[in-house]
Amino acid sequence: MTDTAFTFQTLNPDTILDALFEQGIRVDSGLTPLNSFENRVYQFQDEDRRRYVVKFYRPQRWNAEQLAEEHQFAHELEIDEIPLAAPLRFANRSVLTHQGYYFAVFPSLGGRQYEADNLDQMEWVGRYLGRIHQTGRRSRFQHRPDIGVKEYLLEPRQLFEQSALVPAALKDDFLKTTDALIDEVMGQWHSRFTMLRLHGDCHPGNILWRDGPLFVDLDDARNGPAVQDLWMLLNGDKAEQRMQLETIIEAYEEFCPFNPEELALIEPLRAMRLVYYLAWIIRRWDDPAFPRNFPWLTGEDYWRRQTATFAEQINVLREPPLQLTPMY
Image (cartoon, rainbow, N blue to C red; front, side, top):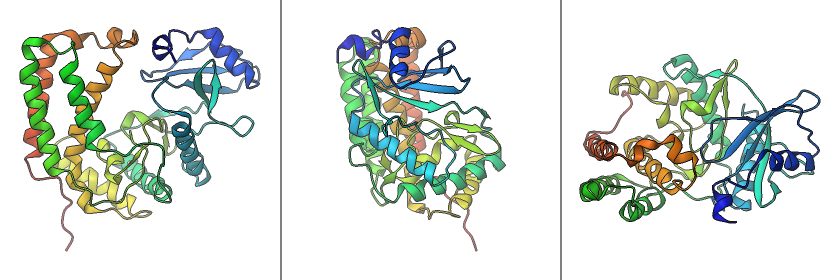
């Protein structure tokens, strides 16, 4: 696959329409782009007025086996009556190909925005996450990676050092702070948890609400600790986060046990996400969509703020981890 394809410059409307036509779908509307930087995702309507979403996966990210594992997990969850958008099968295949691209077609399922500060909705989500992990524990991904410090910290650190996007005058300070953050995480990271298949990116934007939660986008599904799918739902100050965590875990444990030792991984996982997210933007900089949507990355003020953010996270990591209220 060429670099041009990596940036989706060879993906045009005719290519998309031809790919769908090969699967027996005749598009009878325009292709409405949906918000996605990593992949290219479009909503459309066919000649029978049925609504679909088609996702063209970014080349060179996941291979066919890794995509098949994501889809298999989605189909298992669907069988277990978890509300989520699972890819459709065509001739018993959900990982489809056209002109070197992998793509998949999904039913278009609408919903309202999940209310991140609504404890009733949070309880529902906690219950369904318990069910998702109940399914996820049955086996592990064999081709998709595990969440760990190598991919989320060490490889991004090498990228930061090599990247010309980090201003030369600020690079030493930024790298020194990054190293301190990595050292703090490495000192706290442990493996005293059961590795299971996860949603992987379970933030409020990947949950819709339609008389209950609807989970979308398993694109970042990986093996990892259960708390990875819980911590991104927390917001507010420590007291608010503790109340939210207790709400989620109480509902979660109706279907799946939760290991309290994983609570110590919340802030390390947050730090890993901060580092990994920044590296993701840098890796995608050759895609014209990234300079257009992240123009501030080239400014010195951004890198000063990013250094300060990393330093602030170091201080958070040095505080006692979030704990549940003891039960007597």
